[in-house]
Length: 122
Image 1 (cartoon, rainbow, N blue to C red):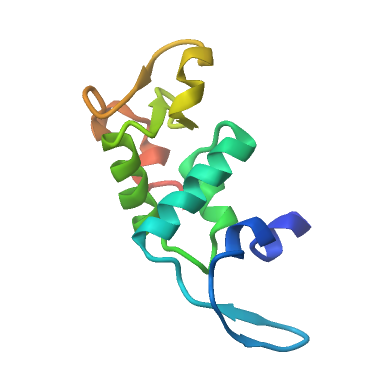
Image 2 (image 1 turned 90 degrees about the vertical axis):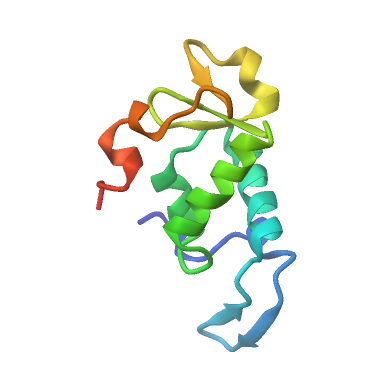
């Protein structure tokens, strides 16, 4: 795993409370739903497109895959992100630059996506 994914980056943890810290470990509070949505949007804006696996790798130890999926679903419903047929999420402001089809709250259905998006990739 790349070094940058070993620990959450500062931009992910900047608003989280440190519970414990020593030379080897830092323990943060888990983000609440709104903080998680903000973190997801920040990551998508930084990398421009990411799938569930990539988002989970960045948030390993801070948020479960289920919480990430629920937050993404809320962001889709709020039209803050869009998703393409391959399961990549984009910030909504990049929707016009996406080639091919993408889905928002109105036409997004879980069965339209590859098996790996539906949680069968581990």
